[in-house]
Image (cartoon, rainbow, N blue to C red; front, top):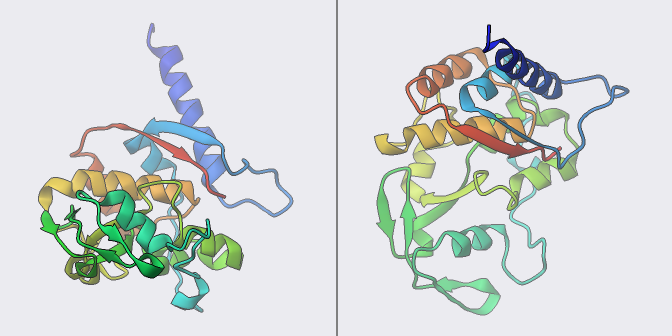
Length: 225
């Protein structure tokens, strides 16, 4: 009986998170962007709504990117490359990057040219559309596509691995580097929570299997919308 209050508290937190992530009528009050939640990844995954996906109407152009939000001459792609560089590149005219080196965790490779890298949307834009972003405003989709506030949202990886992934979710694609699997699954769950996105049944099953074989680490997420 000594553990009952703790169990009740965990259940209350999980129930509250599930309520926040469930789409609500426009008139209903919702948690404001900027609210932060911390929860073990397995509980966080359970809180995500499970819904079928719908790609009707999707066009990549509906997610405007790459933008230069701070008007410093470097767009979102360049900002990610600069932030994630193992060896800093030289910044030239119009934020052209030369030299430098990067690590691609998807395939466990070191690369020595920015041209060899893509900046990947961890949750692909098409996947975001399928699982809730179709109902967003154009500004919300732009913010998602250029998210520099959560380092899990955008990641510099080899062009080959990113193009192999394309718009697939974890039920059909995982990084070739097995050592990155737990981090990828955990970050995927966090990113879906951040944007209040759903998971489809196959995606939910695949992620559940993955996180059940990974450390049940806490994830801290700040809602973006």
